[in-house]
Length: 225
Image (cartoon, rainbow, N blue to C red; front, side, top):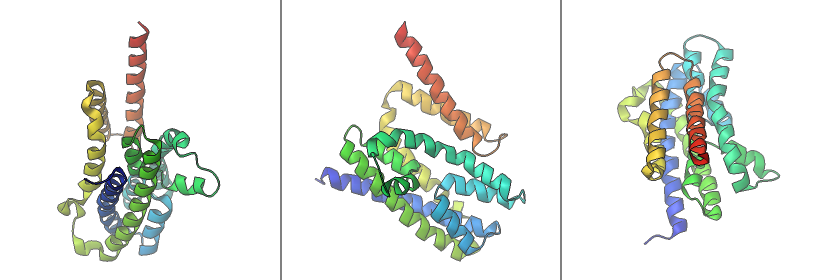
């Protein structure tokens, strides 16, 4: 039987690798959109937020310009600020670790950390190991995608577009055993899918956060009766 520490390491590595595979898709699409290799790598190294990077490239590819692309990326990146609110008391970072931790505050590091509740030590371990694993694999495989470009064909044909989503779903699935959380997940997924067809990139994600707030208010009102 693997130890708990080994289990967290295995989860972090698996999530990091699965997310990194998606980086191949980003690298290829970024070059196809007109960015060169170094511009593509700068987005992955500095922005380091998959959803925001895809939003930037998607808008840029339409010829809309850099400003609309940056705004779309920013809208999707806002969610990381909400993660920071949850993680701040858990991580208690200071000095140079604070900006490093901020850079690694992404969907995956937050999800793995959350999955280790209520053990603070394992939450911290999950955050660091996952954040570092994703950073390494994401950037390495972004470079592969950017270098190979069109040679790999449509990344979706390889299932790379679903790898990160599948890993994330696997992390939150155990928490959906409660009927209210499952209902929230279904309503949020429907809302995001429905709105994505006619609102700018990033907005559906923010509005699903509003759905969670509404559920929370309803729960508070129910308890107060």
